[in-house]
Length: 509
Image 1 (cartoon, helix red, strand yellow):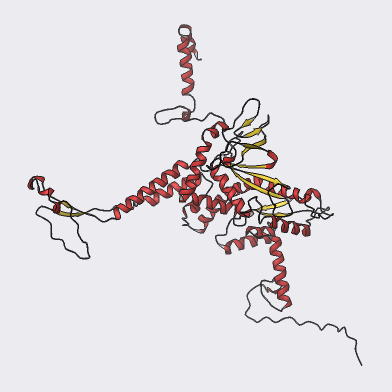
Image 2 (cartoon, rainbow, N blue to C red):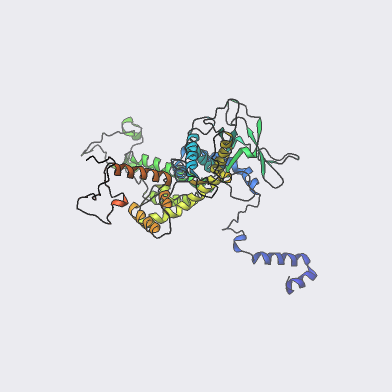
């Protein structure tokens, strides 16, 4: 309190206290003061409380949009392409020898076994690993989370695809009940058992999908946390369940859909050509004139160059004008899509399919957008791809497959996880830039190959086979650096003369 408030406090303490409180409120941040123009909406609840109150609703709304809204379908499709890609997350095993070098022979064998397992890695046998990863990513982004159970070893009724007895069971977010919360001394929060530190120890999972009306779903099974992979979109600390990636743009997307539908309906109505007859003053007509059937509704056969002279005295023929489609629809829609792109880690060009602009502007947008894709890619690898590969290596050890003695056991988990790379807008410029980087010593050939989404080991093997094939058959191409003279030449190629080799046959005199 200041001196004035202390003086007031001698006579009216309550008044002095209220004055001091309101004075401090006035000195606070302007944004903290509600007003007629600023509602100052607040969220003071815990992360789990917010998800419990709205997580299911957001999930179901996002699913409906994915089923019915072309823009949402395009957003999720593009994220699948940029984060997972057509071939899925590529894994290159990197086992080391005891002296720290790459064991190329065993790495090649591991890659072959991994590719074989990737053909049918999940329990239903319906999807390849790439398809499985795209479905899991789409479910996690749209629903906010997805679960995967690691099924190890012999299981009744399940046949593993390969000798490595590991399969993946994909579970939608509905399988873990959101309504199952802490009861008594059991630390269960939203279907997840946690310890005193908040670490999940087990998951309570429905045996069947709760949306299946043909089966009554009331029973759950307890699955230890080491057998469950929980891929969740978390936005706050201490948040157990995930929230949909579309949570901040659902209202905007719904409004865009409704607005476009209204504009399409208005355009259809305006496209239906119509005329009207405008009469003069009502006093100039008899009372029963409008009741005549022939004069109430009139139909005209419209043809090119037609002349209509059937109007009565005082009547005029007018046409219903069309002001659709709205000339501002394109501008308004694109401005809304820019906001949608900002809230979904996407890029405006990819969402709107509007690729206007120069090379520099397109590349800048692509670079900035790809950083968001890399964030999602690292999140997916860390929460799903890496744990699955490590579990596969554990089961590989138990499968009876021989591991060379010179392989460092601690390096069996080593691997490179490669997702889709940033596409090249202008291949010539990109190739020249990479050539300068490699020649300047700031990069490697392997990085250059991976920048094109290829495997360095596979590319080298193919190049070696091609060069050997060409040299054995006398084929000369400048793709072989040994034949490149440093520039174009119009002179025909002449092979160098070789000294005669000594004959192995004995001379006969």
